[in-house]
Each structure stands twice: as C-alpha cells, then as structure tokens.
Length: 400
Image (cartoon, rainbow, N blue to C red; front, top):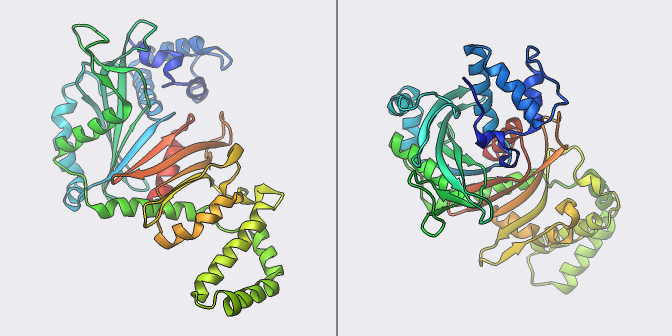
C-alpha cells in the first residue's frame, strides 16, 4: 500500500508543492479530485490514485522521483578527467558497476524503502535525447532539529547527474539547515554531528565516483574554463540595445572629434586603441544609465544579470548589486568593470534573472546565482524552479 512519507507530505519541507500536485492531477483525468482542494485534499487524491493498481502506483512513484529533483535547489558542477570521460561513455560498463547496489533496496524509487544514516543508491536512469545523461538517485536518513521543536527524522534525497560527452558530474540537492547525522540509538544535540547540504551533496558525488572508479579533474585550468563559460554567458545577455547603438551613431561625429582631441592633445603617450575603447565605454555607460525606459535591457532576452563579481589580475574584487533588481546593464558599476572582464574573459559569479519556459503556475522569471570557486561551479536556484527551467540554465551554461 502506498503512503506518502512525511518528508514529502509536510508543507514546510517544500519538496512537493501544491502546483506540482495540481499539474499531476490535471494530466490524469481518471483521478477523482478537485484542483481547488487544499494540500491535504490533493495528497489524498494522489494517494487514492496510487493505490488503484500496480500501474498507477508505479506512475505515482516515477512522478515523485522527478518532482523531488526540481524546486529550490543547489547544483554543484565539476569536471571529470579524460580517462573518466572515456569510461562513462560506455553505458554497459556503468550499469555493471551500479547493478549490485540497486539490488540492495526494496524499491527503485525514493519512496518505499527503509533508510539508515548511510547513503543508498535507489535508482539509475539513462536519458539520451539532446545528449547522454546518467541520473543516480540517492537517499539516507538525517535528523532535523531547530533548537525549539522536537527533532524530526527525515529522508534526504540527492541526485547526481553525469554528462559523459561533456565530462561533467553534477550533484543536486535541497539547501537545508538544522540538519544532523542520523543515529538509530537516538539524538543528542550535544554530541550529534551537524551536517550541511553542500557537504552531503559533495559526499553523494564522491560516493558515485568511487562506485564507478572515476575522478575529478583537479587541474587549475578547469577553474579558468568554468569562469570563462560564465563570462560568455554574461556576455551573451549584455549586448548593447539597438536604442543605445542608435544614440551613439547619432553622436558619432562629436565622439570621433572628442577621441581625436584627447589622443592628439591630452593622452599623447597612451595606446590609441585603449583610449578609444575607454571613451566608447564611457559614452555607452551614460547613455545607458540615463535612458528612461529600462526595459530595453531585458526585452527579448531569456536572461539578464542583476549582480556580478569579477576578479582582475591583481585579485582585486568587484562586487556589484543592482538596486531593486533592476537590470545591472542600466547601472554605472557594470560599465566601470566591463573592460576588466572583457580583457580577462572570466567572471567569478553572476546573479541572473531567467525567463521561465513553463509559465503555468509561477511568475514569469526566476533568480539563479552562478558562482565558480575551486574548480567547481555552484548554481543556486532561489525560487521553485521546474525541471525544464533547471535544464535550460544548465544547457545555456554548458554550451556557453
């Protein structure tokens, strides 16, 4: 008999939101339920549907696996060595490595198994649509204790994806606080080991790598490549609007005259190309920050930056915040540091607003922070994000 675990049942856990349940019911006309029901009513409808037959139970379990992957999530992306890339391209060899682990669980889904403090691999999935992807579903028990309410024993589901052709391994989990190691003998806040989500996600990635016998690429150039990917993604969404280009062209004669005066009479020892570039950047800056209609920096774009952080050759930091989440391109600080990023072709971090591909239940845009540190890229999804939108951000970054 199917019963939804407390980890997924409770509203404050946020693994399964009302809109996701409504969509599940809407796509299955045989479910006898009303989309206007509250959370408890929707869970009751889905539970009754799951218990109708083995087929409906399997359908529900597959849906739960997929919906637990999405939402408010932290993703960590690392590069594999060339030898590891070659190994994981052989799907048969990968499956042989995970087969015995998959037999240790009762059900190859998140729901339906008894877990301990140790990681269990519950499901292995292969997808080969746009590119080859392996997904490993892992789970274990933890304690949640906030210092006020009673401790709770909860499941901690984590997914690890491997992109063989791109040589990437990606850990994904929900950011959690007040998390402690599970102990079957009981919980003592004084002696129990406190955990954080980042550690558990990296631990899950390490578990899969050891299971497959593969390794990270730890060379320093990997960090530069990831930062270059991020710079290219930023550059893609900060092209100069045609309205600003038009203003520049209207003043072309005056601009060229100013450049000539400065290079011939003021900065006579400077590099002419550098001076010209600086002046053009200054002109674009003031045309942009004084342009009344700020929507020119966002319309027609799938994404736009709100905040950036870049590191120059002397390790000086640039940290910029866009007031009231206006597009950063309309702010002076963006142009003050644009040349530095163009020269080095790298960026440490960007907070983007992305447009949703699916707009059934949520606002048109969602926020993502992408940072690169220590040969690892971290993507933080601040709002509930459906899988199609998570995949869109991933593919844009990978393909940048």
